[in-house]
Length: 279
Ligand SMILES: [Zn+2]
Image (cartoon, rainbow, N blue to C red; front, side, top):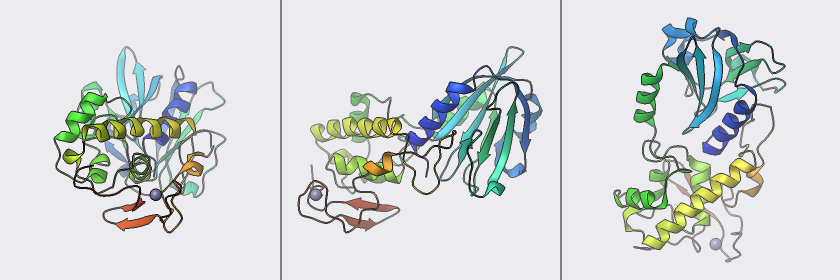
């Protein structure tokens, strides 16, 4: 379930405590958890953490040793977590990678993932470039309004799956797509290139507001999400439609929230989010 806000919270917490630390060991309990670059694993011990950033729903550790740079990319996917002491996780048998750092009370970074959807990659700078180009479209927090307008004009596709298509816009999953469309008052099946300009502008603004508020609230803990320090995200308390089928619309329009079953469940208000030919 981690989406952009949860990945951002994870990267921010790690960025606040890991840079400058030297990796002592990396222990991988399941070889198939390494997607790419497994043969470079012996390079990593002795390297120093330079930075931790987010790309899409992934977290990237930049490591340096003898003026060389390599990356460790953790996909959070549907279920992955990066945890520091003293965070405690259910089902510790799903900790597949343990990284130990020298000289720090928070010296053990664990990668936990009960499913095999999330993986780790060990890449050099060219490898990272290819990895990012192949997987990630525009970042929803960084895309400008003008670029967003141009992007949506290119697609005669239903809006919600488009917002969740990582190669187009990277980082939004089902929870935030539902919340963004409800707040922007747009039907999930609206066609992207038929939206009016003012609607696309409103969508851009709402998308960035929702994602920023979610980051500030520590993300949404639906199912298993924990930040690296073990804290729960509080944005779930501010969800307006996700998981609220048959409850009254919080806009007090008098309708009940409905659930549309398509690829992923869509929660929407039939009154506030009308599917007009052009809206
Ligand atoms: Zn409503």
